[in-house]
Amino acid sequence: SSTDNAPAPNGNVVSGNFYTAKPYKVVHGIDYKCSGMPNQLHTEQIKKVHAKNDVVLLTTVGTTGLGDPVNTNGDHLAAYVAASLGAHKLVYFSRDNMYLRNKVTKEHLQDVKLSFTQSL
Image (cartoon, rainbow, N blue to C red):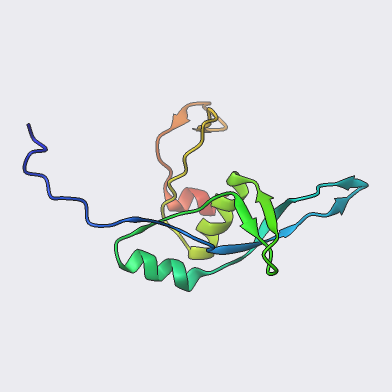
């Protein structure tokens, strides 16, 4: 087959505490308990991982500066990380049926140019 002579993958998947999060606490009378949002990304650590051709795997369970767990929304985390790193590409996996759609034509988009996203 065509994959018999393919080079072996060069890299690993690395997981760790690459961000801290802050809890929402009480908003408009609703106690969000352990839910929150990312508030600091350890970009230099991530860049070191990427420099070794490794991929960073992030979980939606972040921690506060004191080590308390905080449940973060995966969509928000992906956007926060991509923006913080100045990423040109984002690979995001979800079990939910999600897709990008052109607002005018309603067609599904397979990819999006950076210039398009900057105009949003």
